[in-house]
Length: 548
Image (cartoon, rainbow, N blue to C red; front, side, top):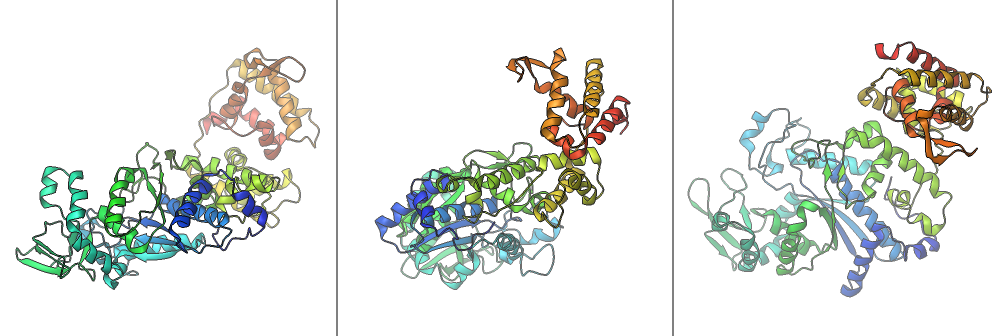
């Protein structure tokens, strides 16, 4: 997954993009119209990151999805308009609470309310601050994915003077900003609110205090510092920062941002951001609001809580490309971000990559793989699915990937870790996932199921040595059709009799593998081996599975 310069310079892709309906193209069209009206010669995309905790997958998702829109924009404009992606870190924010996942909360307590870049790194002395540590973690991951981006630090931008002209304008238009903000606040908060947050010269803390004076001419504010004395500081040079809502609009105005997406929790505040931006002389960017990610309990994932999946956790069990697919699909639908979503994402990704080779140009620009790889879709031969590998691991209890490869090589002669490195990685992921997450819950077969299993084993004994997955599947189906419990009269078999209900295959997986479901049974048997499967049946009938 890389956002290197567009490889799809074939005019056919540019032409196909003009009518493409995938969501990145729909968003990019809005941006094309925006630049046509403004006459601006560059499109600036921005993503925001709050480094109050380690970056999570949601943070990555903003960059990946924004890059997808950026790629769509480049195709729609035939790559004739320069684009930039700015990943902005709000690291001048005060640390309002101590994250749950730091080594020592006590060590961080003296630094509450200080800017995140003034709080010591709790993990090591490698980075100057807590904010710098988290920024480095974000950059490391984005670099791993090959994103084309520029990193921006609020601390650096405020202190270097990059925001000074707009901050002076904020002092001049203080009343207009307050007119926007005050109606959104309760009575108690209105009495003390100020869009300016001074950083105390005494303690270094970000102060939430009312202003005693805002001097637009001098560009200064006066407030009561922590020692009780009135203190005057300039609004420039990093002596103050803006409250987070005005900060959004200020940043858009100062930098000329054209596109920014954010989570649904920001949606109600978007009109505020827009109005502040316009007050400060800017034009609000195009927005895209995505739904939130949820943890296993259906709660919003949080950097400070550390719930949900981390970036490194996903990549322990699956490729970055599968993560890219998860980000592309249905961004306006709330989705659980937990370990159990990984296997499906992996197999869907390889399915889309395989389809890409067979598709027309118009179909390709709609394919998720196109957007995941920003046009540069690799060719991958994946003879075994991740779901099959997990079931193979469940049946074989592998200690190492080499055990899995023994079955794979027998199933697909000529396929090896050397010839299929992507499959080799998938095998490693499957072994780790099996060890950490797959729980077996076997059950004993009843009398009808025992008879069915004995019949399946007998049918498999009569199969030819070179039986493929279709032949194996057909043999299992032939057995099921003779058993009343598994007959589905709403379906028709090839011979005109009743079809087979899914209950039959569910029983096979529950009794033989200890799972509620699995991939196509014939494919599993072909991979695991017919004789190995017959032994599995014999062990299940003997009650050996229940003793595990």
